[in-house]
Image (cartoon, rainbow, N blue to C red; front, top):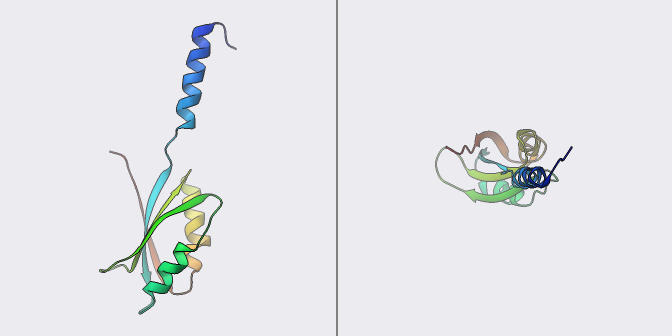
Length: 103
């Protein structure tokens, strides 16, 4: 229960701060089947999720073939996007997820 003007200001500040909650970001390191990195990258780029956003997708050299960056409200949204989306793309062999931390 609000009792005075200072309480209203405090409540409004808390509300504004909670509305600005930073989204969780993750890098998904994807190993594709041999010769299928391009197909996999295009497949990831074409994904749309209700609970997560594909921020970037790049085919790369090294132990991984494609790296995708996802953004979502929470860890479960990231997990569902990977298991129900990225891992079901034809040619994806394995995924490794790296969560972004703010140090």
